[in-house]
Image (tube, rainbow, N blue to C red; front, side, top):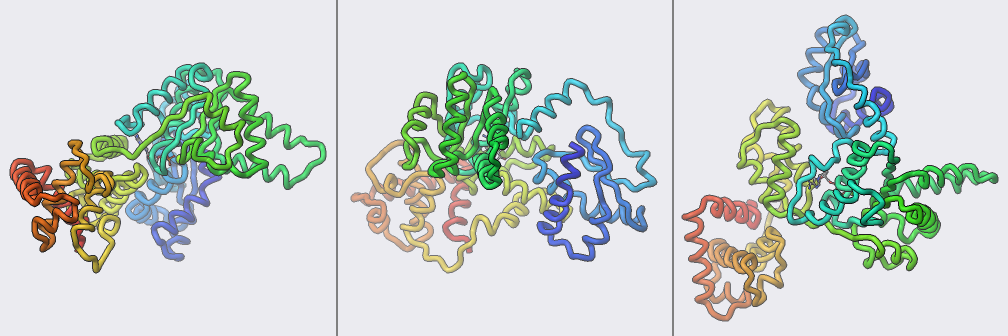
Length: 457
Ligand code: ADP
Ligand code: MG
């Protein structure tokens, strides 16, 4: 880890300067004289070698502790404790206990396999959006190469594909240490291949080592395969790698933003291979899963945050886990930097740009139906259809209520917007939600959130 930090140090401090908009002079004075002195378990000792060390250290700790913590975590993908020292305090820096020797090989293996230790099954929340993918992933982790080969995971951005895939790898490394695991993004796979072709050595030694690297493994994971499909030479090389491993019953795991059938340029022979394994998808998380992910996230970081803050985020950020985590991170960071507690008003303030960026908008029934539909992940066409499933019917009644509250429309006008003939249906729906608001604080909260979305000003 020490070497990785040394390698990445320049990247860490330039990112820090950029992300926190640190002036050149401050950067030269406080940041440049810092370097990694040593790493003890998960404590990084950062040493200051400039002038006025004691005073400088106080300032650095006060001002840059959180930025360093956040940036290091973002660059390395792992959380650390930080200990700032000077040449004179160095000897008193905390020493770790003897690192258990059985840990070291696992860590080393994770690095060799390109795996981020944070992506494991323990930190992966299972919900209705991903339970099938999770179950299959776990059984692949338990018996690689046996049941489901290849495993193809697809889904939109930020929904947990990389996390789940790497969880399989981390599980295998821990529980099946004889197996060799390798994770790669399809970008690195492509770039390596391009580099070899560009170097154009006659004796093919580079090709041989490329092939050996990818074929001498027991578990190969290729992330975001969509970047390979359609690139002829890379796809060809990938096919041979794939075939080789598949024939020798090695486990292949692939992720993509769409299912194999949606790839127009996928070679038939690859399609056949993919079809012989199993394809699972990950959808957007529902409300309960969003809440669970947020809580787990805060718990892992040892933050004690009120439920109302989680509810606010989970109500408003619906599509993507990465954004969900980003919102929480932003709130915590802001609270830390401004020495405030994380409260609902603070969260609302920090996220206001994410949640309500539009000015000058016309509030009519069409807008209301669209926003409410989007919020619940129900299409407008379902809302104006005759479908009567519980979710759709309830969402439709919310639309009725909000149209009545936020526009001048009559009951029959609202009925028209929702394609209902009978205006008494609308009256009933509005009344139903009104009663719900009295009975149930969470409905009131929901209506407040939706109102804010519809009319952010
Ligand atoms: P993808 O590869 O699909 O774009 P990632 O795997 O990179 O998405 O996930 C984005 C972020 O969301 C990561 O930090 C990941 O840990 C987190 N995440 C996604 N799904 C879950 C989940 N079910 N439980 C916990 N964290 C999740
Ligand atoms: Mg990914």
